[in-house]
Amino acid sequence: MRIGLTSVFVDDQEKALRFYTEVLGFQKKNDVPLGTYRWLTVVSPEQPDGVELLLEPDAHPATKPFTQALVADGIPFASFGVGDVRAEYERLRGLGVRFVQEPTEMGPVTAAVLDDTCGNLIQLTAPAP
Image 1 (spheres, rainbow, N blue to C red):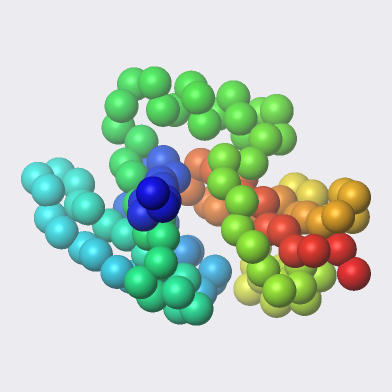
Image 2: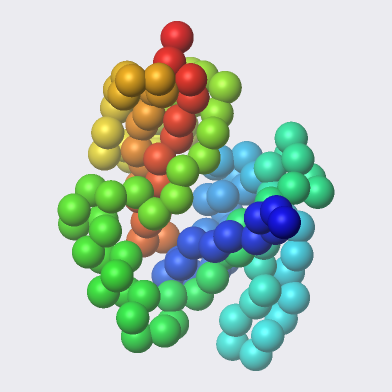
């Protein structure tokens, strides 16, 4: 058994696609029209056949209160691994990304938390130096 797909709820699929590809650097994998919405996934360019991230519309009535509560409490909805959190923090800040937590060593990892502009906080982690 393995993880093949996970998702984040987004308030606008097109805006999310731009952020996750043009800013974070993921690649679009699937884009299938499904009525009002799309089956829209991205993958890491380092693992194009790896786990897909579904940019799922937050249309269900439970998603907005759920994601808003997480953001209000500063809780990331997802975590992505990077080689160097501090370097990625600087790169993304240079692109205008807003961070709610600067790189911080937390035991065996260094972590930072960013706002994905689509309703989520996302954590970046790497092994601590």
